[in-house]
Image (cartoon, rainbow, N blue to C red; front, side, top):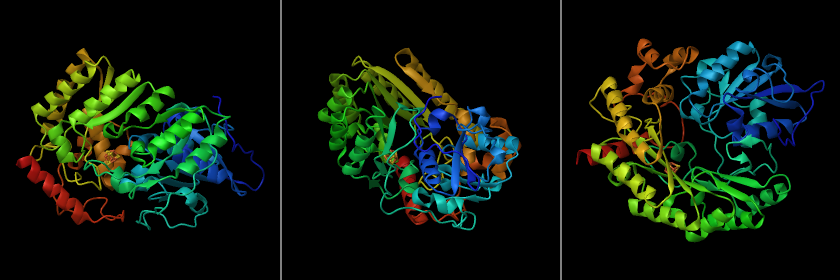
Length: 473
Ligand code: SF4
């Protein structure tokens, strides 16, 4: 593995060793702003040395930097980006015989710490940034004692340099252009966990890009919705004039101007990603305010600007979903394909996420149906959409795999028994965890209700009731 690492440090007597464990592959870890920040903050301190662990490097049991065993470290910080990583994290803890202090953080932990809590000495809820050393030094009260989300009213200053390796965007510099999202799609957890939306100043972005230009020629713009940055066009034209290839993490179809596309294509972009999610009718229910026409216009503009491929994300299992919604998805994809664009389609079952107005929905979205019926119906929908394979590249996520994700996301302490074993669909039923795939009663206490994230549950309830009214109208 060849990486540019400006923070590499050698151990010397007196330094406390901190392991940063990303329980997934290197390619994701080196693109993770959280891993980058932890590494930078800890190695910038005179008292500590940090080394990183990934599942595809020595199975996560020895560090990338020096090959040191995890058990020789004093503190291990786990970054949990995806619920599926819980299994890897717990296996790494077990196999390594690590006996130091174990702390976990990341979006999954902030969403619902209950399923994972018993494996760690403390959990950090929220945004760490400038608090990393306080966490390592044990100066902060962590979950379960502290149930409040840490957040920064203003985005903390971005680190000036970072490790550059072969990551999800290739060999790229990653800049967080914004955090949170100004929109309010009802299924989306980002709008709650990272609220309020905060944008980084153009000057700061350009300055970091300028300082790193000699080291790297690709730049990834990271944010839940980078093109919503009020000065997105200015940012990409500045970065283009510095000679960067630019990769935004995603783009909004209604935010694409000819000018933006021209710059992105000139800077090397070949494919675009949009997330229409569903039919136009259901987009209103989920509050994703983009019309089919806007998506078609954006695809046309993309084609004219020289884009070769469009990636489209859809969901199944939404409340009120009918066959005609799926048919509309197929015809939208066909229309885009007919523009002579290559089309890649990704279909995911909806996980009704905590802290969203959809948190009370059952997995599968059909209230009144039991778990097995909902799963059967999701599998039929997935099969229906697979017929797009005739004219597009289609990947449909496994309904069973997402059922496991739903249980990990919505469960309580009992789910830790599953995490100790393996990600197996049938175990959900054997361990009697299928209740977390069912609809929740609006007045029942939910496993994540004790967290203080910064919104009022009443507001979610009102939105949920509105959804129920809309789909029965
Ligand atoms: S789905 Fe995307 S646009 Fe909608 S709230 Fe979430 S991040 Fe924002």
